[in-house]
Length: 229
Length: 256
Image (cartoon, rainbow over all chains, first blue to last red; front, side):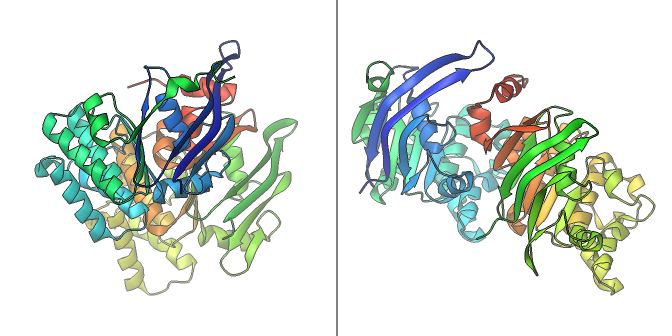
């Protein structure tokens, strides 16, 4: 059984305001991830790791191929089907936290649990637990994270990403800008998610982190257009 | 599940000039859709045709009513449409003054909507008005003040309370945060998001502010010269715009 499966995925950008330049960025991409498995995307900067991840999440369109997450073909799904997938099936820890200003940190972290249909008490308990584990001081929980330091924002972002127990997850540099203690906590969270059966695709520049949690590596530069043909 | 709103071929001309042309989409329960585009692109015309404030030249706007199921609101009788406007629909104007009665108190502004749907008990009406003013963060001791004595942000929150008190299922919003300073905007965005989630509202929001739609809307429709040039998930349209105009729009945003 596969939780995330990509076959023959290709992508190019067309820049209409720059002489309609066509920039092919990916061709023939394929990948599959089983429940409980963590796969690392590797390759040089610009090879298309983030592009591939965004296509799986559905915020980049793909021009051809299949991207199936938990049975839903993201490449062909309706917006509302993708929205449901993002609420219930596929979590995404991006590199940057994007929130409504003035919303307290605790609510920011609890929101994905509520969105997936969890009760208020469950969501809040989960948020408190994660924030404490990630060493975000309790006196900050009632404040909006928009004024926090980069590292604190990243930890809030990770807490938010792990709040709901998604069966599939995308992690974009989850250990970047973290100190050793918090990095260890994040690696624990990833291992726990794997243990409960989550299928994970991650980008880790930190080689030690990658070795600690990833079962396989996929070199994205193999999907560069021109090579596959 | 059926869509809450099914729009097909909606067209409106002003003389020979096109207001909006051949617009079709489905809106599902609980969905928030943003409509973006520059001034004059037809977004407000479209919103007004959807909400029954303007008659379209052609097209259907089928709304899934509570009592009779899907009904075309373009061809329904004026009294029936007005009733819909007081019950299942709400309209938040850019200018709070257009959506409020400036000569009566804040409490009366909220209570009036309740009376229009049959509420008669003064104590209940006042209690509900106070409850709703509280939800939009207007203190109870301001309930007897007229909206004229309120700041712009408070007027906008009062307008939202007046609109939502009857528990509508579909809210039309025309630049709801336009003209407010950014700190007030943020508070209003948070309020709207909470209300949408708690009440399971569907909403159609017209704005030219891409940051507002990114935070509020699930889906996006981009208009130019009366036509829809692109639709999709909000972050997909903003992160990977396909149409030349959308690419221009997204790349023109100033970074703060």
